[in-house]
Length: 593
Image (tube, rainbow, N blue to C red):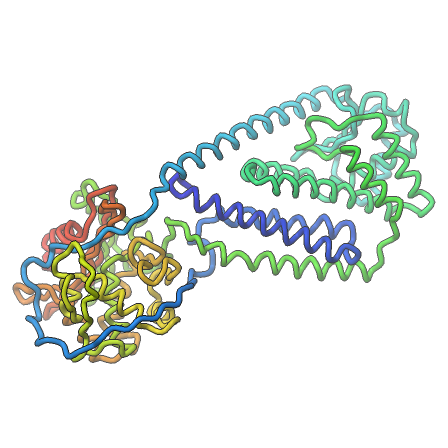
């Protein structure tokens, strides 16, 4: 379900997708105007009906992943021999998580205002649609079945001509001024009262053929789809324009279908019958949910022009129309992967495993939305608290530094013996950051600028290739080289964190063993009772508020190895230290550490 906090991105996607699709369809119709049948012109609009739901489909249901990167940055940092190695284990203050706030525009007010404006528009149009539906229901109640046997025989003859066998109610009503077809489950063809007094039998036959073609093409059902999308996309005037044009093309297609069933001498009679009827009646109010014979004067004029120059459609024209429609469909469908550029914040990871135990550990997470994922290597099974949150992708923040360090080593930007980066002289609010750093000190003090420097030293595309190789979360670098992992575009779920740690630990990616061990040494935290704890905390701080806390890692003992990931979220009290505190409490309760 789309919430108000996510609405801005969804709104922009809807606006972009609908406008782009409409533009493409209109362009195709103009370019291939003479190479499409009337029905093919109408069929092109079904691509719009297929495209409009795309932005509303949850991103996790789409069969592709986000892999967009558009940055290109160059920088250099002096690397010198690293100082002597520190103790392999951290001091007891490792839980004092270090993070700096990233500044983001607070779009909450805009999100909420836009959402309530949109929902208000939806409500207003829904009321108008309900009124139209009630008017159609009223027409049904006041419709009298035809009693004229001659006209009933003519109607059955037209049905037989179009190979329609299903029962259709044909009648007349004083509440309509134009012939119309409506009814989702039970179809009605309704004409004005005493229509046979001022229409010739030939006119009536043309009307029957026209309305029955609407039925045959399932246009009543299409009407409901159009109304639904008009309600949802009421804010885009191009959508209204497109559906008006679609309805006109549908009438032209029905006209063409009727003309194809007539001899050439009858073309003028058919056109005259429409002109005659349009002169007698005006468009009904309930047209949104019904198919009707006439329309605005401009539409009638366009239809008459098409009828006057109508030529029987050749087989070649039909083949060309089919090919163009297929190619257009492929082109429009190709936009689906690009919708994920503005990835929804509730993107989730599809996780399936037979060896999972779900356990409620909510007492440890009081005041937080959170999840805990534990993998027991020897038993080969997962223990998970909060199934939904465990697959929810959020920003990794400083937990990503494990893999940033590995990339730096693998790319040769730094080495185990040579990992020093000079302080850039900028004054940071954290004193330990205001000095030269090597890999060990940078991990220990969670020095963000050090890892940003490693990223800037990497060749364009190197980071993307690395993330693709290890399949890191959504692998989205679109947030920019400095911040993609800091409450930005790169996102990963707790389950993925554990899976990735397992592969990192066993070096399933085929990296240099020396580099893997260097990173392992840098994240060692403490040991007790024959067990060694390794890991990394992470805190997401936006506009001074701690909204996202991580602790990931593993516990090694002689008997077993356990991999874990804890994530907590709330409005202003989530940090890596609290996530670590919760994790240690659970591990202690389980007798693991």
